[in-house]
Length: 428
Image 1 (spheres, rainbow, N blue to C red):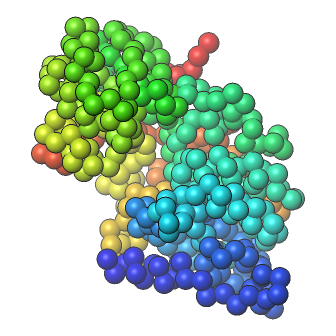
Image 2 (spheres, one colour):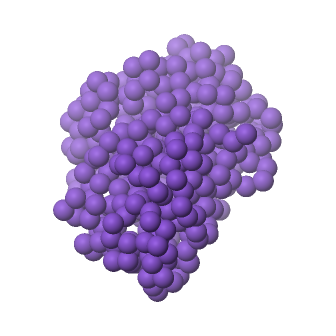
C-alpha cells in the first residue's frame, strides 16, 4: 500500500538532530519531545506543541498512520494556528515492534516525556483504553498542567465515569490533581451496551439471554445490556458466565434454548472462545438472534472463526462509518483520500475531529497547559466532521452514536445507527 509507505516516511521518520540534552538543535519554536519513538517535528517554528500517541507497529499500524496524517492535515489546514498561537506537531509511538501492539512501559514513558516537555499543550490519543489508563495520571499531574487530552478512540467506561465493569476508585484515580483534562469522541462501553439492548428491542426480542466471559470488559458490557434491557421492558431470562477456555458450549446452548430466549447477547471477546460460542449457540439454539459488542471485531475474523454460523450475527461498534458522516465529514473524507491516495478509515475522521477540538481549546485559552485543559469541556462544534460535538461534565460526547453491523454473506453490512440515552445505564 503506497500510502502507508509515504506516511511512514513523513510521520514515523526520526530525522532529528539531537543535542547533548536530548532536545533538537534549533534557534526558535517548540522544543520537540526528546524521545526516540517520536517523529521529527512538523512546523518547527510553532511555539506550542501537539503530540499524537499512537500504536505505529503491528495490526493497528495502517489505522494509526492514517490518524497521524489526519491530525497533521487538520493542523496544516488551520495554518498551524489556533487563535493567536502557533502550533507544531509530533507523532509518537506507544507500541513495540516485538509485540506488534501498545506496550505498557512505553505508554508510561511517553506520558512522562510529554509532561517533561514544557512546550506540549495537548495530546491526541492513545487509541487503546489500557494505554490511556497508564498515561492519564501522569498527564493530569504534569507541571503547569494538567495537560489536555482529546481521545478519538477510547471506550472503557471507567476513564470518565463509574459504571458496569469499572473498578473501585475510577475515574478519580486518573485525575489526581482533582481537575478533569480528558474528553473523548466515542460512546463508552456502557452506552454501547445500551445500544445493543435497543437493537434487541427493535428486532422484536421479548426474552433476552445475556452472557459474559467473566472478564472486566465482558462483565461490564453485559451488565449494561441487562440494565438497559430491563428499562426498555425486555425480559432478561438469563444472565450467565461462560468459560472462554471451554472446548464446547453445547450445554450452555441447551440452557439458552430451554429458557425460551429469542435473542442472546455475547458479552466478551472474539479471541476468548467467541467463534466456538457462536457455532454452538447456532446449533443448539437456532431460533435465537445473536448480538455481540465491538469485542467481536473485525468481522472477517468472526467469519474465519465461526464459519457459516456467523451469518446473521449483529455486531455493534462505537462511532460512525465514513458513509454515515455528515457533510463536513464527507468533505474531509474526500480531501483525505485525494491527499493520502487511499480511502479514509473512520479512525482518521475521528482523529481529525480530535485535532479540531484541540484547536478550539487552544484558541480559547491563555496559551498555558492548564488554560488549554480548562477549555476542553467547553468546546462546541455544531457541524463537526463527526457531527455535533459537545461534552458532558464527565468529558463524554453528548449524543454519541453506535453503529450496528449484520454479517451477511460473510461480510459486514451496516444495519442501523443508534444513539442511546445515558439514562438507560444510570443506576439509582
